[in-house]
Each structure stands twice: as C-alpha cells, then as structure tokens.
Amino acid sequence: MTSIRSDEQLLTAWRAGERRAGEQLFERYYEPVARFFFNKTEAGPELIQQTFLACVEAVPRFRGEGSFRSFLFAIAYRQLCRHYRDRKGDRIDLEEVSVAAMDPSPSQVLVEGEELKLLLAGLRRIPVDCQVVLELLYWEQLTTVEMAAALEIPEGTVKSRLRRGRALLREAIETLARTPDLATSTLMGIDTWAGALRAQAGLPADPREE
Image (cartoon, rainbow, N blue to C red; front, top):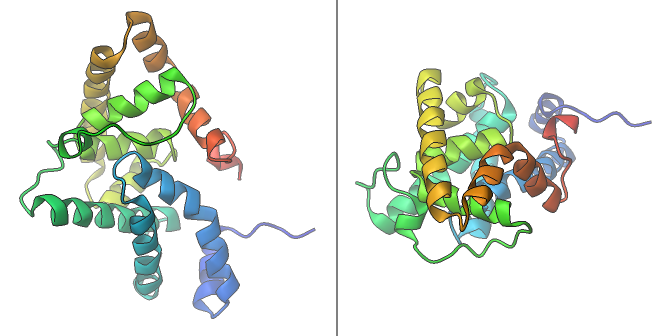
C-alpha cells in the first residue's frame, strides 16, 4: 500500500529533481488555489496559471519558514493584488474597496443552494482583505499563523481583519437577504456552506482529512 507523502516530503523530493513530486503538489493544491480566485475575479484561470508558474520560480528560495500551503497562498495573494492594481491603479486600498465595487456585475460562479449564493454575494461586498481572510478561514481552514505568513502581516492584524470581516459580512448578508430567516440561516450555517462549497468542488468536507 502506497503511503501519501506530506507537502514537506513532496517539496523535498521536488527540489531533489523528482518532477512527479512537483506535479503531485500542484494536483493537491489546484482546487484550493482555484477557490481562492473564483469569488474575486473573472480572471481566475489566468491567475491560477500565474500562481503556479511563480511558485516554480520561487521554490528554490523557499526556506521552509512556514507551511507549503501558506507559501503558495502568499503567491496567490500577490498575484491577486497585482491583478487589481494593474486594472485599478497602484493607489487602490484593498483594506477598503470590495470586489463588488470594482466589478459590480454579478458573479458567474455556479453553485447550488440559496444560502451559499447569498454568502458568496455578501463576501463580495466587504473589503477584499477582509474577504481574503474569511475565505482562507472558512474554505481552507488556515490557522492564524498560516494566514499571517500568507498575507505577510502580523497575527494581530489577521485577528482584527477577521473581527471586522465578520461584522461587515453580517451587515452585507442582512442587507442582501430577501428575508430575515434566510439571513439568519446563512450566518448560522457558514461552516456548513463552506463544506458544501468544498463538496461541490469534488473535495472532502474537511481538507484536514486528506
């Protein structure tokens, strides 16, 4: 029976010249990286490709200070920031501007379930940096330490963005919901809808089960 190698084992093998190890890492993280972009921009396929190409270039400089997935999401986040600033200018403030403000057209994401659609719409209404930390928490279950490494900010800043993001998300969902009951069920079931999103992507309900 073949054992499943950890990210660290695959990374070590890849650096040692085992090409297949690198391919396995990319296969493992394609869906998470795709999820990172899908509710934020229509340029997802291009940014996914850019993220993995940048990963190939950056791996020789990665010293293992954090997890491989925080390293990869750091690259994805930089690609996202570059994408927005190329479109909107260097002075754009991602702590204040939302995806919906930059791209008011409805998201083309195809998902099932009224609550999940409402949750995704609400996330697009809050500042990008708050949206990022909430999605990394709920979709990928990154720890505060991993998010701090990925976003290159202090852990305290991660926690403050989570607090602010939750408050703003609640306001957005309550504003967008067609009924108060729908808003309540969406907010109370965020973990459930996060699991539904991973299931719709063909992934296990909890990525830690992999």
